[in-house]
Length: 178
Image (tube, rainbow, N blue to C red; front, side):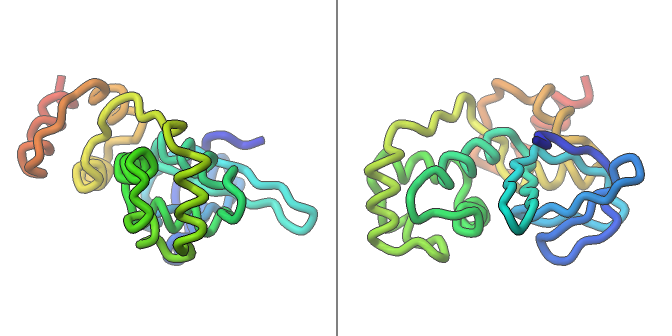
């Protein structure tokens, strides 16, 4: 099973990315895609079926964990789990599950009222987010500046994030500069 890949993006078609890892091109379905020639790393979930070998790439282990938890729910396949992560943050998904907010979960394409109710019933209290995640705009900005997800995670773990994105970015850059 493939759990992590790091390399250069050689092709990007929306959210499907081909990553060159040591001369081998791995095609991954991602949440947000990537820029051509960008160096990236992805935490990978591998799906092996009789007719396909599929890779799903995530920026953080938390995103991958949520994907795996969601796909363990009857009626929620990989496409719906990816749509959930494109629509809601990890923290928003956890909050919706814990509070039984089926309306919030219903915002996700492919999740109707019955599936949202089933998700709450089966997953309430099972999604643990160990620490607050950096705001997604801050993560995108840091990646755009060339920091890897590993560098970001290592330098920014345990930080209490301000609500303002500008202040959060300044805080992140000060921590990364050390």
